[in-house]
Length: 380
Image (cartoon, rainbow, N blue to C red; front, side):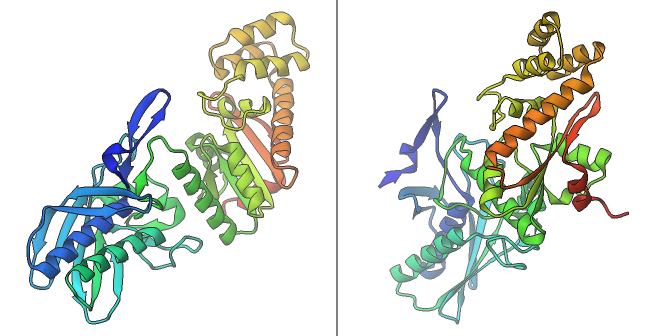
């Protein structure tokens, strides 16, 4: 068994520490509170074995002991991962129950599920299945140690949770009032794409459950703002796929979606025309090469192509082709190339529409978008 101090990953030549999840914090806090409740003594450290078979030895903080319950906290350490929940305090309040089972609920700062399609039922605390199991096993371990045969009531609280929730996917998923208690392995892997892809998958599944198989998709805020402010679509149904355009399309195909309307800034979507489906700059660029290729196909001369290849940004490229009076023909060719790449990636299993824009020039081109837009039109 490994200790958390021995867990790290190497990312881009750097050694990064692993951390532990909110689920691990909740389970450890519950175990510590149960031990203190049953032993009638205070402890300052608790151990927890995670599903990843990594042993945690954690400080027990902010202890409150009463005749009826014990409440204490564990502070989360996300390691070297840029996690918005890093250093938060996760509390567990544990009391005895006449029922011979463990009842787990969420209090202040733990979100409530308000929409179907998530792991927990509507009305339940947003404490996922694995953390619930970890909490149950942790307090049962304490019960075994002290030969207690009754049950427990466990209330998980995260005082900063409501404020932090605005920085997570929770409001979009229909989780209100706080953050989720998460973690399938109990360990946070730094710089992991898995967590973001999992969030995108959950959101996509929920959209499909609530709708008719039609999905809105944007890489981020720019696309969503454009859909809302310029196209007047209902962006509550939008999925932000970040740079993972190809993988999100794969999910849509695998989960039986009918159609996707992709809207994005040209700085992102132009890469798709070159076959780049993960648009993060660390993977590939090809923006200038793709723009030059489209310009040549539209009849540009070699001087224009050279100017595009030397341009520092897509906005500068748009200025160049606009000054030559070639903006529309170049954009028409580009959007056809983007469309063809997306159709190939989806194995022609989806109806696909595209809206391409820039902040300076606004709408640049559309492909197969008119009919799909009507599915998401804001109701006046």
